[in-house]
Amino acid sequence: MAADQPYAAVRLPEGPWWDWDVLAWNGGEPRLAAGYGLSHHHELEPTFAPPLHVSCPAAFHDAEFRAPTPEESRRVTELLGERPPVPAAFEADAGGTRPASCLIAAEHLDVVAELVLRHWREDAAPGQRFAPWVRRPAR
Image (cartoon, rainbow, N blue to C red; front, side, top):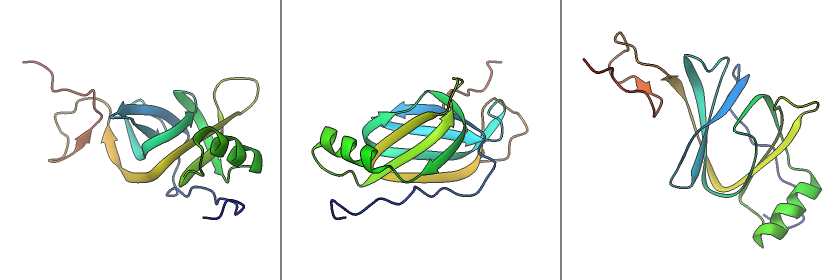
């Protein structure tokens, strides 16, 4: 991509992505989780690998992804010494008096859309995926 060519907004699957959190940061790869509510499960996991720059809160609501502004593009390019392949810019409710402006830059973005349970269920379907912290209760 040419240095003066603007970035497009990151595109995610349609969904009720109201609640967001940083699900894991394993091996230098921030993995976010999103869903309508995160108390029981989530349905979306964008993973930025490897991250080059991350500026976002650990939990937020109602993220609106957009193209990075020219100023954000210039700033992250100056920080990194080159234009990142994947910049994800968004505004989100982080509990403050105004939306938080967030920016994550990475080499690539992987998106998984599937139901992930956040607590143990005996009646979970075979092969059902659980969040990283969920363990079968001791018997």
